[in-house]
Length: 277
Length: 363
Image (tube, rainbow over all chains, first blue to last red; front, top):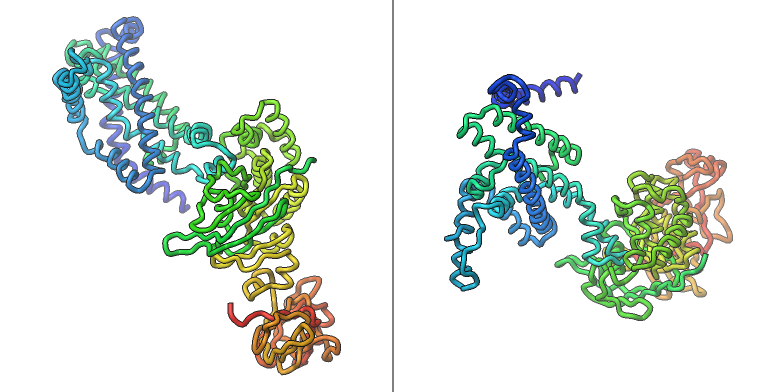
């Protein structure tokens, strides 16, 4: 009886969110789905095009490559930050906390332009390299995949820190002591005990980063300079610049399906509460 | 099976540990003999675990020195000391199978695969885990996990095995079983065991010697019989089991022992510290006392009345009060209890001279 009314209360509290999701996402999603099979003519033609069009294919391959790279670099960096955050001295912990929190306060646009200021031909890095005589010609650091990977990694690191830190916090300190007592060196303990025992956090973080990265739009648009188009930007181009709504919609639906599959995998490794750290 | 060739001998000299102004350990000196089973016993916060952590090398002593087989190991980190350790809660590697857990210290020492395999097989057999080698720790019962922890800690034939309250998570019947197994492992391996517990019956049952801690001090070290029968002070006497304490006055030496007045009756003590004079506490374990209808001739006796009784099955526990208002308890057969419990009957509480102890009034 009690449990029932408890469930009812929870349902009532969740209702506004569910309603908002239905109105703001559910209905438009159905609309997009409809476009993908009706424009310009009814049928699965757009999905066929998606599987055969070399341009679309190359964008999907590039997106996968960038996302994979970003996942590896962001998770590695997040692992180091989480390690300091969880196991560092009080001063190091505070520093790590700022590293994690400050990026959240700066808009994605500002951060992307910040990287342009650093990486462009007239940017800080290239100016310094030439001023010191290390290089004659500027290094191509932006308007290419490198710039995109740097910007996206920077944006996604904080999201990867939380699941990793959560796994590190859950680790029983005595297990590490036991390994030491059994004669293991610090390197050995890190690689054969600490990393495997925090693997759930690593996998969770990797999935979060990969899923987020798949739908990235602003950062690749600015730092890729139109040369490293990713899937989200392709959708934008198809819908706003060439009136090819059907293909744009089909790409969107495919992206949503991939993200859905990955999210399902994510929930197998992590309970949602773990992501909040 | 073969005796460990390298059972270690430990020596702690003036070990102290402070956390800021808090002294967790005060000036502790203790020798642990080769192949001995020493128990560190005390209530929580008494410093016994801190001392174990210093022995293991996980904590650094603030003062004093530590020797293993005569070599100064005070500053040696845990990973180089090669002492086996069993933690409270076992601290098994959850992502490794039973066999991989046991093999870990051997792999760290870069033993050959053939030797690792042989040694792991030997340890698995020794702790009775055949058929569980490929399971993860989470699939095992508490007692089985405990066995894995023991096997892992002993796999590399450490000179000393340190155990931090290893049975605290087990239920009572399993505890008894594991205690017997640990005793057997100690005999089979011949390794020096240092065991931390707050359970006095466990300490008395297992150890070759017991070291009793309180408030960061080592109060007494001795065989279980020594510390139980000849506690050096009131804390040790009370911590090791029930004990009756009665005020004693007019103490004077007598033929190597002492005499004194208890409840206005002269009582004799076979053993007494030489300096015993004046007033002190007379302590006698309940199992060394009995009750009688008349004062005993060859034993000490004082008049008491029964206050209440508790039925224990094999005996009855009687709670008694003396004329001066001191309380005592004793376990006696049913018939003896019946007379004492009849209203108003004065009975005599008796004990032999060699069972009485003099404890200093303070501490």
